[in-house]
Image 1 (tube, rainbow, N blue to C red):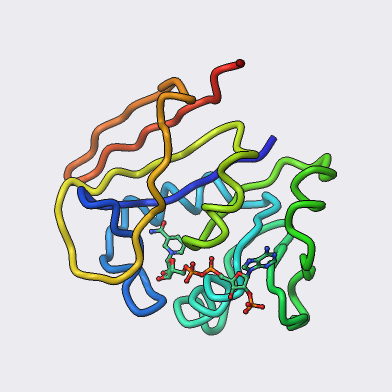
Image 2 (cartoon, helix red, strand yellow):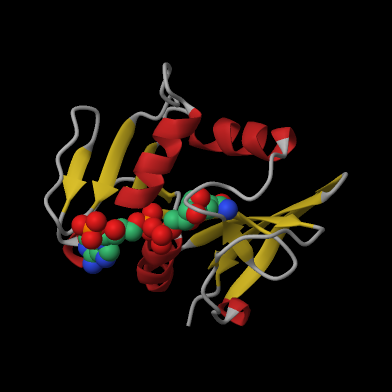
Length: 157
Ligand SMILES: NC(=O)c1ccc[n+]([C@@H]2O[C@H](COP(=O)([O-])OP(=O)(O)OC[C@H]3O[C@@H](n4cnc5c(N)ncnc54)[C@H](OP(=O)(O)O)[C@@H]3O)[C@@H](O)[C@H]2O)c1
């Protein structure tokens, strides 16, 4: 199963200068609880971004897949050069954790979406790509303070 997980504000903003535009501890806790001991896939820029957040102790993923075209290799990550081949062939459950480019490329392969709606507007420069949410049905929704945690599953064609 391929699952995408992200947080976005009311304008679908997701990033600011390769960082998150906000700090919502409840969303970070939710993200950590879902991705702990899981295989995650991210783009090179999100990989660099996470390193700035977790300088000493990396997040406890089971496996890190990092997509880049320029063949950068990292000690703690498995390099994905051919993203489409990877998405078509993987038998693992994968959480796609960003960023914009990788979400956009992975969306057609997504079985499940975990969207944290930030009930506010923030400043930033990276937005989630527009897509057709009607291809997915809502299966879970939880409201907490400034956030809605929603889970969607792809509707079979
Ligand atoms: N709000 C959230 O939930 C959330 C989550 C994650 C990230 N973000 C934000 O998203 C932003 C980063 O997004 P981004 O779009 O700039 O970067 P990104 O998606 O993290 O990474 C982009 C990289 O992916 C690689 N790539 C592109 N196409 C590829 C392909 N076909 N096959 C393999 N690799 C490919 C490229 O590597 P090369 O360098 O080799 O060209 C490119 O630099 C940051 O602001 C971050 O904070 C937000």
